[in-house]
Length: 484
Figure 1 (cartoon, rainbow, N blue to C red):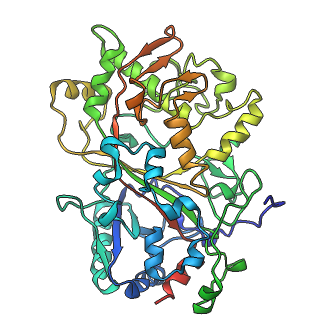
Figure 2: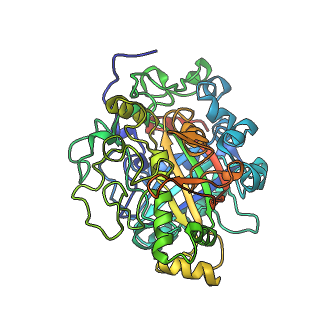
């Protein structure tokens, strides 16, 4: 049902991770928890609220040594005592979960990435809630983790560990905020259209401003529609009150997609040798950058087509429809073009931009595992990949994103844009960075060189765990804390 508009956002009710990626809190930890004694677990939520370790609103985001945020799976909410009639108000995707067989096929969680092979999130390793901790120092994070862990037994909580007993959810701050393949990450993000003045240091581009309902339940989205949101049942209302209009349990909350993505750095850079005979480092970096859509330092190919060329005054102030309509600079199949096509979804750029805004997600990922090489520079990554001298062990990205409509946002991007074999004139190709090329022969097209097609793409990223979670607003957290 289309509504004429929605009320102003109740920012003081919104968990802070939706408002900030915590760039100054470079240390983070995600604790995967299960409810062993559900009747005690509500006390843990109350503890987070009373001790003020959680932050809400734009104010206070930088106060204190460590900030906590918390999100719950369907199984977690059910174990806490949220009744089935209330739960049925959540979206089908959330209720079915990420490991549902039909959903795994849709997301291309197949082969080595299939849920039965995950480290966590499947069957007996399903999580009930995830506690997200962010700190400005390693010591501060260590102290916060220890403090919360000490409270787990009395609160009926148990922490999941990996297949060999290792800690899960550990993150590592990487040099110059790059991901493990060596590319700057997290550069373009959507912004709330109506965020308060002065809440950010930089004003947003109009192309990145989206309606609150794209990220928050309880508000209108870009189409003027209120996303489906759970309302307390009559039985639930009798248990304890909820101070939201219409007993809207979802209001000021969001869906969290959490996926542990393991990156094969050696395979990625070795594959770049397929660019031609006796490829130089520059040849490999150029091919890798064509696949990503950016140079390793984060500069977009559209505004800086040559690696050593001059930097654009406004590097992100571009649109493929106007500035690169034929993919001469950034190939149509490049990762950043597939995941955010900007205004190219229609012959009319304005209409195309409006369409793309309906599929935006807010990313909050953090890397894990030791860097393949400490410098993170392409030349040394390539040398270590060829010589086999890279740091051993697993590494990757804890991918976190928020959206109000799992089907139309995260799942649409994953199925239609990333793994869709038909995309903006391309056929038989998928995203070369994070897609599943098992059925396409690893093909990637570069229109400008001229129309070069290479077939060296393999699956460089495997899924090692995941879950759909609900990040409640403050009122919903207070309700959960009172269920005991």
